[in-house]
Image (tube, rainbow, N blue to C red; front, side):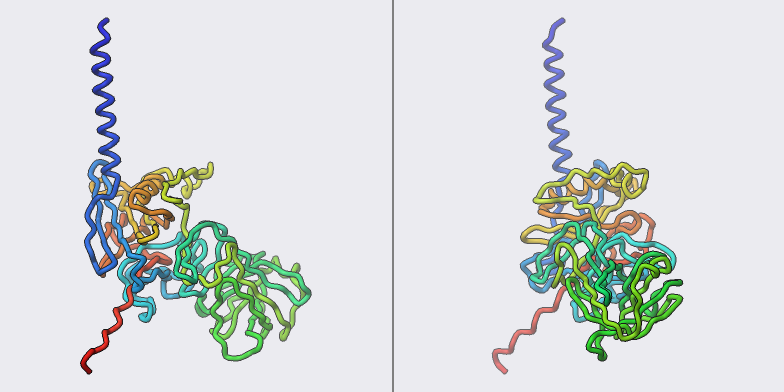
Length: 399
């Protein structure tokens, strides 16, 4: 047998393989030109026909001080669901003009606590939802982004020196302790148990807006049985489930308690935070995604192609990214590893996954830019938003 044709065929196949790899890599690398929406903010819709993929990207210049990254929640409260366009309308005007946004964290979808984020959210410096140990993005007191697991060390210290952990603005359950703030809305929505209405010490007309890394001295104003206590701006409500009551020390009106909103790492001074996960990129490299061995859709879907949203950054830019999916003629979606590779190729040093599927929504310069897989905007809990402050008027040199 003449080995020459075999060697020639092998060489041809090797060349074709190299060409295919190079072509695939190039197509997966964002090369579509960005369009300038405002000075410092660019947008592109990157289309790749081979798979197919349709990706929307907003790129924000971190050196431009007019831009700020904020979180928003439906109705500006801890619960509730709204389309992304409605969440943008509910943001305080003093924060600036919304210019780009994506959907945010995973959330409780139904029942009394619909819209409760799965993890941490800080809204304009104030705690709306507590961390649960998962991955979060936060903007620190110096305006710098960071991301990683955040643990909840919230605790109440009782008059006898003992302490208990507590949750924040969430479904309490029968054996838990949860603190409710004015961001909860009108009432705790709880059923059964005992609730302690707390006021600041010294007392006065002070609006409770909890920040991370704080300690508060409070005193018990009133004790109520049965749950669903009203929540007012000048009070907090500490709610104990009925199964927990026998393990708590006796309390009476006038007693003092100490509340701590400590976290690890310490998020004191953080202005914005939102949870998601997992991390997709670290130190410029796309990460290998290894979900837990479970039949849960949460983990199995990580290896499947679905609509996705993500946030990333490097030393010079922030990136909001959304991948359409479940639409064969337009875009089939990405696995989390594909999304991580895309974000790394985009230039991200760090990137974090956000909620996907029907929640995946991308808004820029006044309009929804992507094609939601449900055919319309889904009502979601929260969002990550870029806002732009107007330029300061120039002084008139000839008054």
